[in-house]
Image (cartoon, rainbow, N blue to C red):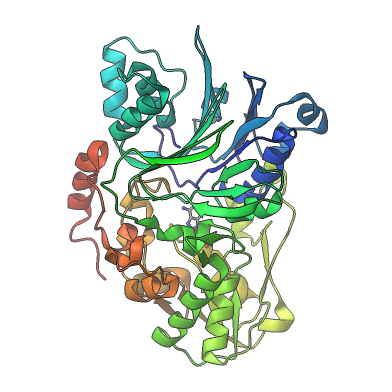
Length: 480
Ligand code: AMP
């Protein structure tokens, strides 16, 4: 899910439940455990005996829902969404689930991902008179379903799914069923669980199943359409032209460490990344530290494999400050840091291996190296548990311009200099693939690694031209 405005973005999280009297409350609990996937908007649509009702708003879940709201949202099925909006697009009409009221029925949809042919579809349909309610790419699916000439709703949904391209995990709630669909490459994670009463849950990560007491049932597979209704769960395919290429950034950064994706625990995968990083990028040092919270698993792996002690060199404030008291750039430069602090007693006088999970724009790396140096660290060796991010992503991470990526613009030696680190090393692509270890024998071990090697598993459709122009402009600038 994204709008036409581009900036560094996180993912979204979706949660759906069918067949339980406390659907809104379970959806709230599930979304709460998916809050890391988006903090700028949240919403829930409930199905109360065939009537759909939606509440959505800006902010984190607790800004949008209070106890009275959940009491009021009575229903036996629901879908919900947490969203990270881009600058300028944090308008209420873009917050999901997107509700649709037709003269004959109602729908609500929630989407994680990014469609690569959204603008083409929208332009075609607008030329034919369609009126869109939002600036979100996600809305296209609803228009295509309604315009489909197929007879049954199942076939209309399949017909629509075959026309959209890119990354998508969709939930669609109707008056009598819940659909879940995954794109042909399975770029985004989507899992099914079962509640003790037999009801079903479909959501972005297994951590949300644990949060509501649901038992893992299966990972949704690329190209599948699931339907849950009064007859239970049924699985079919809208296409068999599939090739799993799940986003490697899910394993590196996005997903929660307690989630499993296609049977691989995220924390364990990150530990493996850290361990292989220690083999590929060893350094003489006194201790290893991570950047809370996203790189702690990789830092543990690095420490174990290198035999160096794992230490708490950085601490993260658990509370988020009010946006109006975020420090200005000027205050930041004076060293005011609302989120992270260095533990002086641990790092002073020490040669520190600082492990982070990834570098996007380089802002964090510059800041954390400086924090450790200011706290008296004798040396700071920055080790990144993923390869240099050099190419944009068009399937849902929303890094759509290589110009935003420091590794697309600077060599490793230049980045080391920019960050003020004593050394800098990254994990290789083969080691990333090995660390995750999905064993299907598929290209890149069933991972999408296009942000590292520029080899996209699908055509880029609407983005092809601007991508080529940007690559041509960058050519010659990159000194790896
Ligand atoms: P940056 O400061 O721009 O280099 O961002 C790097 C940090 O942000 C890393 O430490 C990651 O934990 C985190 N990160 C990685 N990918 C993303 C993303 N797509 N959106 C937001 N944060 C990210």
